[in-house]
Length: 303
Image (cartoon, rainbow, N blue to C red; front, side, top):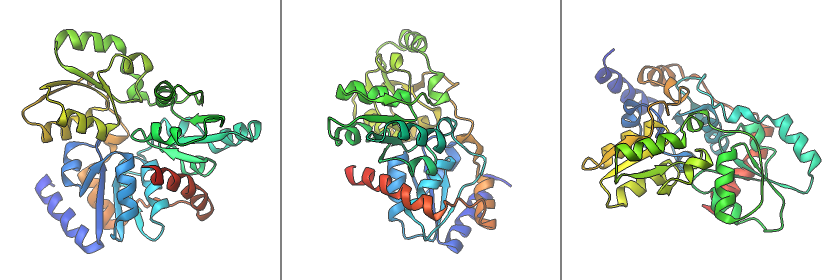
């Protein structure tokens, strides 16, 4: 079925189901263009909590849809492809985190939203890449902190705040593939271009960047900055909203291998099928959802 027919069917099903479509900015361009809202984890989490739709079709990966289900327990949350997971989220299990907490009963656990609902349920407060610095800064300086699961984001926060934290040894494989050598090559190829990086990148690459921000922060920085050429060190899906919002500017991916295969599992066809069949549904057991809601709410209260 051509895209025009898929989009027409999608619009019909949205009205029929009273559905809203949320898409992360790492999704393929067709999905971003079809969505009602495009953004990063923090922005989409807020929208999931505030929407008056009956159905949320979340075009992202599983932990994002789980967060939407936790924030909107009375709504039906769908994901186009149930296999769209997150390798970083799989790098810490609830059992592993529970064992660490048992060894450090007085510690405060700060958990990146790129984690399972079960891990969030064992956490004290959550954060996204957009507000991780603010979240950690809000905690008493004397608290012992464990940051899970992203060691790279955690390192960036530690550096910004000059604060000690124990970091879980997790990472995003897509961002980990980006190397400082690539930045050296890109700057030689595009002299004068600003290097903008996501804090999930390796510290050695982040240190080379002209600006570090979440996906939405990258889009805002590049829009507001008078520079006309940028090298983008994050998942290549963000190039679409960058180019769409700034047609007069030039954006180069640091590398084309910065492509998340899980984010790219979703498609227009699967979006249509999801709304037709009302599957795959993403649900969270009530006891876990209740416990996970508290650290998520604490995060949203901070900003």
